[in-house]
Length: 72
Image (tube, rainbow, N blue to C red; front, side, top):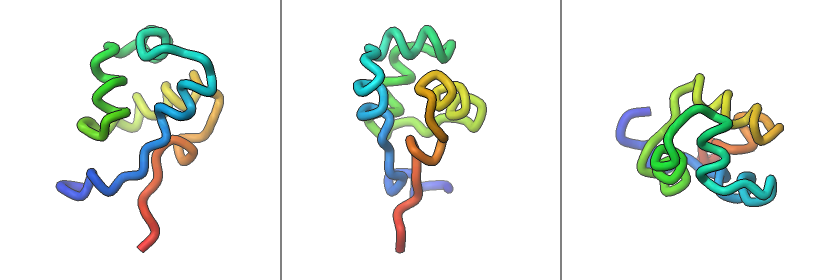
């Protein structure tokens, strides 16, 4: 993906809030720091495949629900 990661559509914050979880609560469940969750939500950090899968499992959704490539 390289430098085009800013184009990644990210719905993590919406799904986290729908699940009524704070960033801290999600970070504990996904075994990552709260700062990582914050950085992902703000588009600063792209999660690894493993982390994206952990987060989606925690939020009971598909990875594609959280992260998508924009349609050209």
